Length: 183
Ligand SMILES: Cc1cc2nc3c(=O)[nH]c(=O)nc-3n(C[C@H](O)[C@H](O)[C@H](O)COP(=O)(O)O)c2cc1C
Image (cartoon, rainbow, N blue to C red):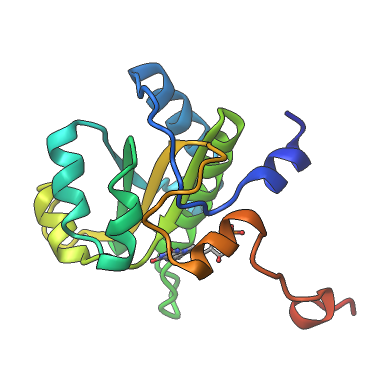
């Protein structure tokens, strides 16, 4: 798929077909994500690829109910975590670990899209509970969970009306003038 087509195809969908998640798939997603730029090449992103049924269930318990309803059909949940001391802090106090982990996450979602998967990032979860389920180190921060399954045209019965609308049409984007300027 051409780059622009992959970008267009990437959507935060909530309906998933079951999909087999093998080690090659996971490694491929990780390789693409790991090509992201980062401050002084610190590569502060950390990914836990959760695919076992038992752990998927436990991760779903950390989600807000509105997310758990559809995310329980996922075949893979990627916990993206980092911590400030894994990345640059500028002399004037700017931290870059979340920014850099976000860039790697974007690449991971695009790689998933290219492979016929749907990757949906969420903030609606309890980060401390997720950290404990995954036994992550003290001081680490779970930044997002990327909920992944196979792309499908069948709408999940778990969805509310507004979520069904978002399945079929991409949520509107701001016009150029609202987020960009040319000087
Ligand atoms: C940081 C972040 C947090 C998000 N949290 C949630 C969430 O908790 N639940 C949800 O259904 N979607 C969540 N989303 C998905 C956004 O709603 C979605 O990206 C946005 O509506 C644009 O739609 P699109 O990704 O299909 O283009 C989140 C996205 C991002 C980047």
